[in-house]
Image 1 (cartoon, rainbow, N blue to C red):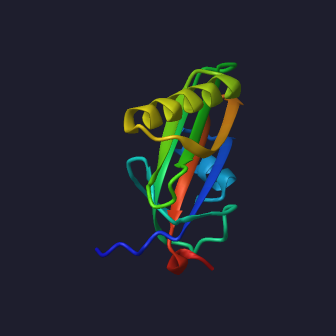
Image 2 (image 1 turned 45 degrees about the horizontal axis):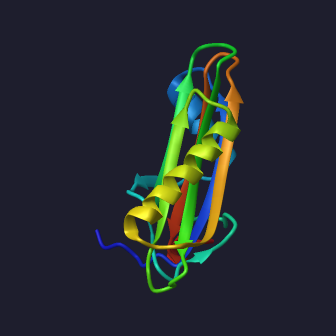
Length: 160
C-alpha cells in the first residue's frame, strides 16, 4: 500500500459509554468524529510542513494514520482520561512530535503529562518548542466507558 503525503494534521477527542468495552471505544471514536474511518496506529512524528487544522470531514472508510490514546473501564464511578498533544520546533524544516497518554486520571493530569512528555522529547532532540497543542478528555464511568484522544495525519485525498 502506498501512503499518500500528509498535508493536514487535526487533533480530536471524545468520550462515551457502551454495552461492552469495544462498543464504548467505538462510541468514543464516533464522539470524536473519527468513527467511520480506519485508523492505522502510528508512532508520534508530526510531518514537516503539514498544516494544523480543525478536524475536517473525512471520507467514510478512509485509511488514516493516527496517533491515539484510549482507555476503557468497567468500574462505575472511576474517572479515566486520554490526551494527545503535539509540539512544533522553531525550525519549520524539522518534524514535530506527538505524544499520547491514557490512564485512570483527570483531564488536567493527562494534559500535564502530555506537556511534560513533549518538553522531554524536545530536550532529547536539542530543539526549542515554537508551538504546542493538547487535546484531552476525561470520563466518569457509568457502566462501561471510554476516553479517547487522537491526532490524525490526513491527506487531501482523505477529505470530503
